Structures are given as C-alpha cells and as structure tokens.
Image (cartoon, rainbow, N blue to C red):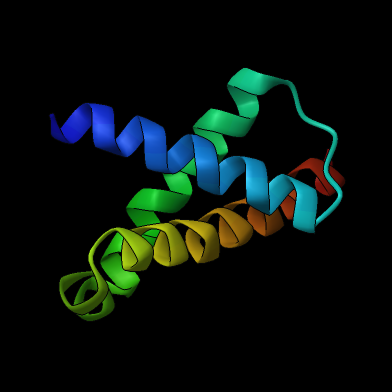
Length: 79
C-alpha cells in the first residue's frame, strides 16, 4: 500500500510542480519527478506529515518536486 500511495502522491505532486514551474515533461518524467519530490519532501517535512496526514504528504511532495525540478534544470543547463 505504501508504494501505491507514493506513486499517487508523486503523480499529483509532479503534475502540480511541473505546472507551477511551467515545465514541459512527459507523463513518466512528471511522475518520477513527483516521486523523487515525495521522497525529498517526506524527509524535509516529516513533522508536518504526521500532523496533517494526506494534505501534509501532498504539500511535502510538492515542495520536494519543486526542488527536484530546480536541480534537474541546473544539471540540464550544464550539458
């Protein structure tokens, strides 16, 4: 169940983050960015996640996905 939750929250967060940052990404990349963001955001906002539940997970995943997109753009810009 945890893996399904991670994919669903990651997909939502990836979609929101790519729209907020106006990134044109295919669906798989969007979900992968969201999953990476969910992992990063979950580590950063562990306390918020415990208090707010699903909403905290989406907020944390969104923040994490935005950070991952920023790193992706930095690395992509170097090539």
